Amino acid sequence: MTSARLSTLAHLRGDIERIESQSEARLLPRAALGHAEADAALQGGLALGAIHEVFADEGRQVAAATGFIAGLARRVSPRRPLLWVRQDFAELESGALSLRGLGEFGLDPRLLVTVRAADLESALRSAADALACDALGCVVLEIWGEAKPFDLVASRKLTLAARGSGVTALVLRVAATPTASTAETRWIVRAAHSPPAGRWQPAPWGAPRLDTELVRNRHGPNGRWIIEWNCDACVFHDAADPQPVAAAIADRPPAPPALAQRRAG
Image (cartoon, rainbow, N blue to C red):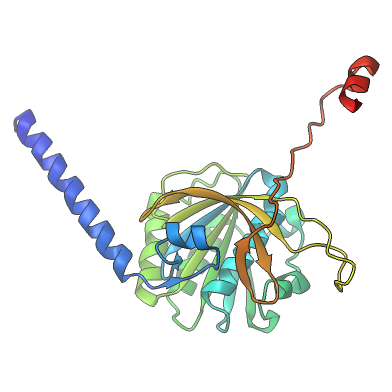
């Protein structure tokens, strides 16, 4: 086959992929997040019956990523059971899931089922079996570290199971580097500065704020937003005066007295 014919074939394949991608985008039902710019990038909201990856930016951001996952699960399916699959050692690394914390994100603890898997292979099997059950509203798969078994083939199996049942899969990746997958979207989540609540508020702490970066979006543009979770309305929205949390530099030596004085002035 000549190079010209190979080039034509490649262009035709690209056109077919774009047409199929646009068709899938129109057919997939969606759940709006409540944040106008994010929903616009997602063409109306998070696609249901698909896989979405959420990466904790370094292991210390696992709490922020877990909160984002909880908010997504609430938006995806507020009144159907949620199955959360974790590896055994995840509780040692980050602690047990807080039912009170999940409740603040609008999730009913009575509808939460947790599965503790001995290893990643068992976790993948549990998630695939759960995604085949259309009685569930959402399946969360929590994976720690660079997980070789979670490759493109395993991701494709989860996607097919999700498409068949309409159940949405949220994959929480901690201390990992993004690799090729069939995920509809991929997010990197960090904590954002949350000012304390007003003096008349019942709690002294502010609403959950997250620095969310959409780095993969199969049917639209990427973006980055600092969003806030509204615990009453159970939606994400723009944070007023958004500020990311500055990373602490543990190995920086103290500034010389003269320099410190100039900084203070």
